[in-house]
Amino acid sequence: MRCAWMALLLLALDWDGLASAQERKFSADMNFEELIDDLVICSVYFDIVHDALTQTPGTDDEIISSYDNISSDFLQYALVTAMTTGREEDLAIKVIRSKFAVFESGMLEEIQYRNENLSILTAEHSQPCIDLNNNIREIGN
Image 1 (cartoon, rainbow, N blue to C red):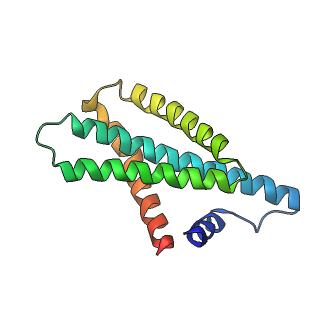
Image 2 (cartoon, helix red, strand yellow; image 1 turned 90 degrees about the horizontal axis):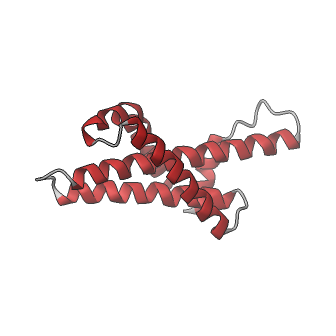
Image 3 (cartoon, one colour; image 1 turned 90 degrees about the vertical axis):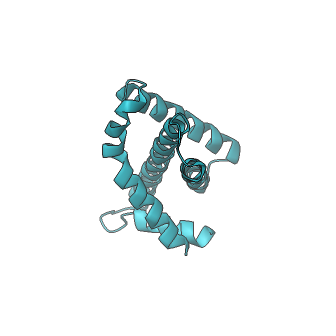
């Protein structure tokens, strides 16, 4: 699994245009942080959809569970990536929780806390998050 993460992270880094070791470190850190943000954003998106599905009568429990699992997987990937940047586990957890709260608040405000406006988030996040999830799973295999 660690090899898969390293491959994913190396793919995310743009080493070619950097002139010095300091610039490489700064760029790598920025790419890690952008990846962490993307992972947390996707976790929040799937969590919000999960919550909406639980409130929708007749929704298949297996579908509800799959959204919960995908949200949890994204959080786990974000945590591993945050720890890869050298953060201790406790600090990485705090960072991920903080990012989750900020992104969740923003998304809920964007849909005015109404499930019927969920299509706004779906239009913005569904395909990028599905692509990110598929890319992570391909690298892991």
